[in-house]
Figure (spheres, helix red, strand yellow):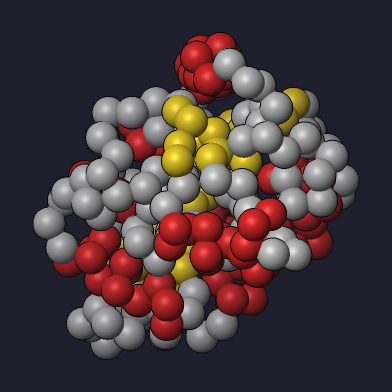
Length: 241
């Protein structure tokens, strides 16, 4: 696990951009994307770049259950606004939040992931160390699933909705095994509220109580943190470890 400490989110976005560029230059064409505020500077940097994704595939980590793709807070809408309206992709896949048959959606999305092995997966991390929407206690061998969101996650996401009552209580998500199947992973985190999750992810035991801790066992992970997110981790003076 390589950890990079940055001064601000714009700098983080530029580092992530370099990894995307390197992946494209080495023939990578399938990219896993995340949503929320964390990856926004990465998408800004990609949009402003001259990188060509016209022969690439995009696959999203997750989507709220019960939200149509046209809903302002759907992750499908987020991806259109932040990336797909600006960069052309050969194809893009996002879980269907309106599919009321979880087994059907799981089978469909697992098949997409099998058909298109990801060369690079972008991740954020929750305050409880979830990745995707895989909450603490999720088995490491899970694939696509319908997740019950914890109160902690619902409270963290309420800022995107008019009221906490409007926040969906479930979401479709790539499972932890699905995430780990990516050849390369970038995880980004900013802010003091992520500090304890980051410390547990890097230094703690590998346990299903800390979903992100399983990344210790992946062969190619880059973690990009600002100083606040790294503040509880006793990192060395070197910028990169």
